Image 1 (cartoon, rainbow, N blue to C red):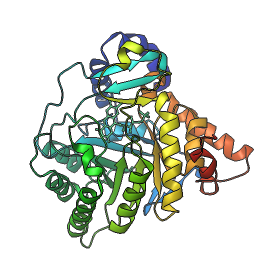
Image 2: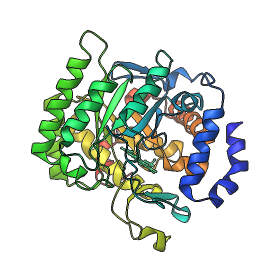
Image 3: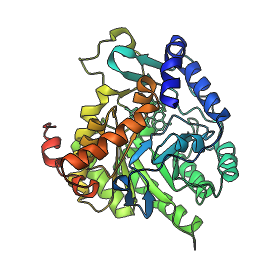
Image 4: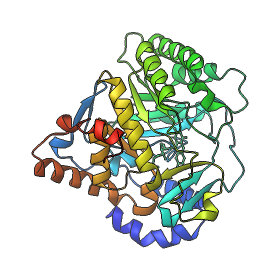
Length: 361
Ligand SMILES: Cc1cc2nc3c(=O)[nH]c(=O)nc-3n(C[C@H](O)[C@H](O)[C@H](O)COP(=O)(O)O)c2cc1C
């Protein structure tokens, strides 16, 4: 139903600039009654991170930046949704236009720069949905003009713990100058130590809020070694691989749009982000679960992420091109694959990580 509505609305939406179309989509979702998500096939359920996910297909950060429509998004059939990025103080982000559709490449470039209504607004919306079912996380970042970026993450954790199932530390957005420097070893160690300490203190006596770390696809394998070691040592609960890329593959057809500054997502991100996911899986050795994100646009792509090492997956850009019907398509396709291969999701996780890390998908 919602898939057919999208097919009807897509030409009109794509005639608008990408940000206006997105604002209309959020508005339309906010007007939708909240409905219970369709029941999922039991074979799709995933038990990780001390939570029961009804299916492994999640919505990636950046779609519902202001935390306005989490329950409507869950109603579309996602197994979990990540809201945000949220930063402590309201900030406008970069001037418009700041998001571009590379239609022939089925890709998106964005340089939003963490536009956010701020932590208080996000928190209030989460307080108002407290007690509702569904797994909801929040992606957190630092203000552009912050003088103590680590304190920004700590504040987000202190204020959001208990209101979300998980919080994702975003040090990988390419659109806030200097943010990715926090991925450097010394900074990261301090950031993660203080974040986990803040979480433990805020959650005292309550079920733990999960803390995830989201990494960029543009890091070297040496940097990945250091990040994984630091994340494991500091007790991060899981890693999300990956954010958007600043690289511009030669294969891009929309040459003019490809020259826009920002992070590239969608189909062209699939191979690099999945290789990095496999490399991460090989280093993490199943000590913590991974969330695979980047270029998922089909059941086959989701299945490859799982074989590369993802316990859960997320997507965003493909929703722009294929609409919400994609969620059901991916879930149905995954069940068919499980049946055809006579296997389970648990058995498939990381099964082909070695080959995929070497580029053999
Ligand atoms: C318009 C847009 C805004 C985004 N905003 C955020 C954000 O605030 N925080 C974050 O960690 N990732 C953000 N992302 C990255 C996505 O969460 C995801 O990691 C990336 O787009 C790759 O997935 P995809 O290829 O399925 O889109 C954004 C992506 C897009 C397209």
